[in-house]
Length: 476
Image (tube, rainbow, N blue to C red; front, side, top):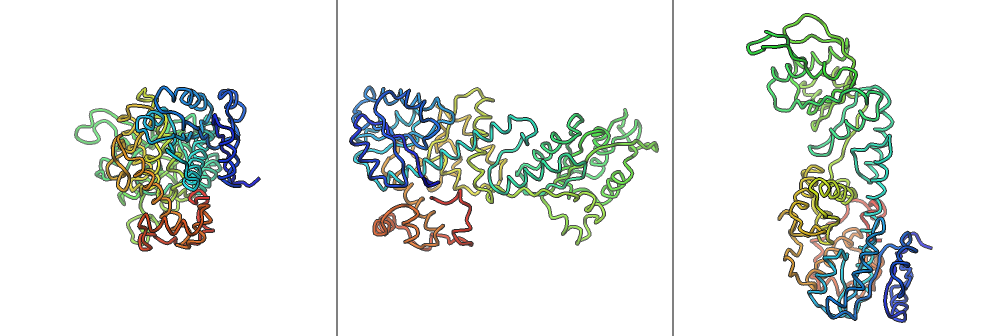
């Protein structure tokens, strides 16, 4: 059996029609047809399916949908629940909305178009894999010794996780680099909790855009009477981090004179509070973070070279979210569960269009922006599903934003257009390869390109050959 075979459970009251559809879908789909007890079948093959295809073509009213809705409820009890694609006989808007409210992944109305059905099933399989990865990651973070604060499944993040776990046990200085919002402090906390200093304090301080005198007082503390207003002695962050970890964020903003003082603390492991000549011994691990290029700052003379080498014993670089697009859905589901619990809401999933919008957005604010977007969506959501209109306006451009009386035909057209543009981009506008990737005839692909008015200039060519593109971003 091929690795990319899509397993479809087709529940239909007409077994003969099920066999016809299984044959029409082709070798890339393994279809099991069921028409009996839904609950028994669901329990038997819950570990096998990728997608559930539910035949409701005979339904003409919401009452007719009840057996199908009961089946959907039973399917959704499995962990993780698979996407359910519902076939309806006619375009009854109330029936479409009803099944979508109950958690259907998508609907197909009227006589099924096999090519379109293949496309939707492939997309549903990708969604299923993302859901399965999320559940796997959640089970991993529940186990001791894992980087519990971090979520990600891309190759670059897996390498970072492995390196972080390796260096956590070694009491060396760590420099974490990356753009704002990529999760540098979360990574620092994860390293601390896996280290031998996990029982000690984790003290965090940001050096960004603060007066040098204030930063000095925050780091070193002061004695009573050290300066006007110093009415009592105060411990600094360095002293508070004794036997634990000191995390200095935005270390590139640290003034030159304070760089010298910090270097001395690292060398002799002692310091004096402001207004005191009595040295205090400290034992802490230093983890620093910056969104600046410290090596370039050393060349420019704005950062001490000797301090840079003290800090940069091990470097961990967190790439921006746009460079690890595979993690967007995992992080989105992670935040969805987090905020649903926090706000006591029963929001459990994203609609298909909402997922597309999350995938297509560039995320200039990185993980922090994604977290804020999901938090906002959970607050606005009224049911179990986050819809496209719950996302910010900037993310909805190019997507159908009507609520909820949208046109199903327009939504399908938009979905096909985006899928074709993406696949043509991945295939470098090679139409034969694009047709093979999507499992359609080349002539039909040409007709779709003309119908959807896709111009070559709007398809950005990949900078690397298709064979080198990340597998998760390709439509198999």
